Structure formats: C-alpha cells, structure tokens
Image 1 (tube, rainbow, N blue to C red):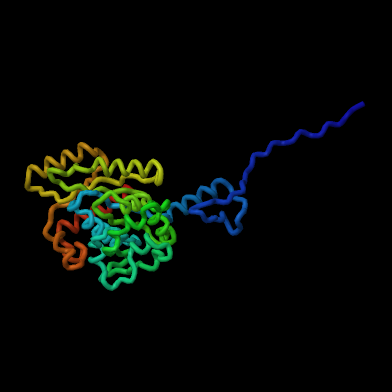
Image 2: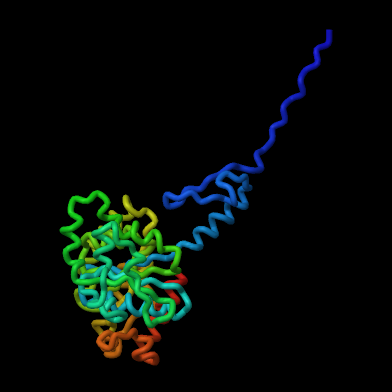
Length: 306
C-alpha cells in the first residue's frame, strides 16, 4: 500500500512585518493605518525622517559666573537663526539677562517659572517672537529664584522642562537653553531635556575650578535620566590674546579636555559687553566686530558637531 505524503512545508522568509512605533508616548503609524504592513527598508526611512525632525537641544552651563554663558546663549541662538535655523532660546536663569535683550520682561504675563512650577501653563503660552527672524524666546523672570523650593519633593521635578518642551520641540531645528550659574534643579532640568551640553570656560587663572562638579552632574544625568546626553564641546571665552597668561590657560584647557574643545575661541571684547545694554545681539550692534565673526564661526562648528 502506497501512502501519499503531504508535500513539505516551504519556509518563507517574512518579507514584511507588522509594526506600531511608540515615540514620546504617542503611536506613530507607519502609513495611513495603525497596523499597515511595511518592509524593513521603509521602516528605516520612516525612522530616519522622524529622527531628522527632532531638534538639537543645547544646554549652556557652568556653575561659575562671569564666563560668558549668557552672552554665548544670546549670540549663538542669534547666529543660528540668521543661518535660517528655526531657533528657540529658553531662559531659565532668574537673572533673565537673555530675556531682557529680546523683550520687556515687565510686560510678561507668564515666564518659564510658571511653566515649570504649574502644569496648567504650557510652553506655547509663554513663547515670544523676537525681532530676529526665525528666533523665538521662552522668557524668564526673577520668580525662577524660588523654583528650587517649589519643586522640593516632587518626583517629576527633573523632568519638568523636558515635558514642557515636548509639544513644541518639532517646531524648531535648534533649542538653546540658558541656565543659572549653579548646579541646582534648573540646570538639571536643562540637562535632562537636552541632547547636548556646551560648557563655556573663561581663559583665566581659576578657569577649571568647579568643572569637576559640572562633569559629575553631567555623568549622573547621563547615567539615569538622559542616556543620550552628549558633550557638544568646551568653549573658551574672554580670551585676551595679548597676554601670556591667557595663552597658557588656553593651552591648559585644551590639554585637559582634548578634542572636546571648540576650535573657535571668543575674544574679550568691549562690543560684546556693550551689546546687551542696548538690547541687541552682537550681529545687529556690531556686525563687523570680531565678536560677531567668532560667534558666527561657532554656530557653524556647532551645527557640524551636532
């Protein structure tokens, strides 16, 4: 007796897969439907396009005061906007110096303090258009000084800024965050929300003092709250090219931080010091100055690194 055996099953390599991508707690459909079948190549294209829409978020931080942190925030943001990048400058420094340059803070109804302290106030409610094309501002006020005590004991305290930026982040190519000269909750919020950290260091005798604490905070944030955080670079500021001390300190900084130091250095400049008093960036106050040229070169280097 002959028994017909069933034909062997052919192993078929799956050419298509069913996917639903979860990004920022939202379901991103691959095509028109939530569960359409797509190939791996199409998936790669979708991921690349999605990631390309996410902005570079740069925190400018150093717990030492007087290192040119706010000057860098103002002029780097302005330079990026002048290059056609949709830029948002977020001021979370209670001194509000970045905000004063671009708006009248006494006329503000809300500020970044209200966004971080009160979940009912959204980031879009405080955004200000500036006179610089492509540049928007999330302004600060002195009330940010009480943010630390306001958020004590709150489990989501380090994530307030990240959550606040989420609804507006895709509206911009670059977000620049100006922080206070401290390693408190505001600076930690900035690091948690960012993709990159830029550290300005003054070319002075005590230049490296305190940088260990800053880098330790960076490592702690990277280890837990924001594993994708990277050091964009160290920017040497207030360089007096006439003095030997400035040259020696510059060499020391480059030796300590090696390849992380930007090639561009910011010279000590009267024009840079004067421009905030006239509520202007260096590009409108003294467009032909060395400060304008240096910050424009820095913006190109930032875009290349990021």
